[in-house]
Length: 315
Image (cartoon, rainbow, N blue to C red; front, side, top):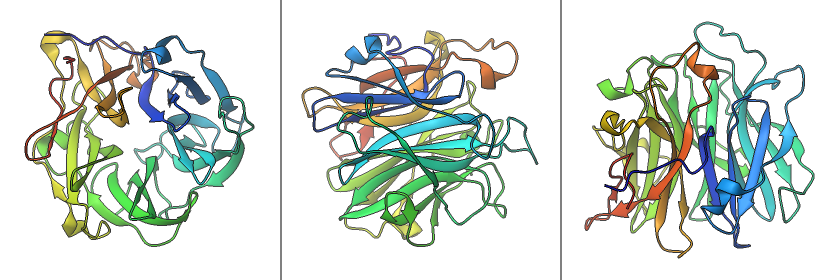
C-alpha cells in the first residue's frame, strides 16, 4: 500500500482550482479562521512550498467578523470570486453557529496580487445557518449549491441547489437535494455539508460530508444524468453507504469536505480532502488545527461511477 501523506498540513476544507493560465490555485480554512488565504503553483506538489498570501482579512466586528470558514475560489466571466461563510460571533445560539454566506471579487489576472472587493452576503432566501457554497455550470446555467439549516427539518444542515442570475445573486427558489437520514450521516450531528461537483461521462456527481467533524466524518455521493432537470430532486440518486470513511489502522480519521481538480496530465481526476491523523484531541475540536489537506487520484469503473478507494491510500 502506498500510504498517503498530507499535501499541506493544517489546512481544512481544501479547494484547488486549475485555471486556464496553467496554475493551480489553492485556498482553505486557516487555523485562525481570520481571513482568506491563497497560494498558487504550476504543479499540485508545488502548492506545498508555495508562499501563501492573505488576500482578505476579517473586520474586527460586524456580521462577518468571526470564524471565516470553507472558502472556495471560482472564476466567472473573467472575474475571480471567493465564496465563504462567516459569523458575527464565536458563540453558539440555539445549538448552532450563526454563519451566513458571503462573496469577494477580484478583476486581476493573478488573484494573489489583485485588489479584492467585498461583495456582501449571498442571500439564499432562508435566514438561518448556512455555509459551504460552491458554484458550477450546467447547460450554460450557473448554479449555487450549499449547506443550509432548514427550521422544519431535523439536523444542522441539508444540501440545497438554486440557479443564479449572476455570480452573487440567486435567481430562483432553492430545492433540497439531500438531508441527513442514514446512520452514518447522523453520528454526533445530523449534517450534510461541504458539497463538491464533478462531471464524468453522462452524469453529474455531487459529493458531500456528513456527521460530526471527528473520526465519524465521512463522504456521501449523489448523482444525476446530464440531460436531467437538476432542479428536480427526483433527478438525483443517493448512495445509501458512504464513499470515503476513516481508516483507523492507518491513522486517517474523518476524511471529508472535499473538492475536485485535474492532474497535470489534464486527464486524471483528483480528489482533494482533509483528514486528521489522530483522535486524541485536547480541548475544543473547533480550535484543533490538525486537519490536513490530502490529494489522491479519483478512478472510474466500467459503469462510469467514481471509485474513491481508501482515504489512506494513494495510487
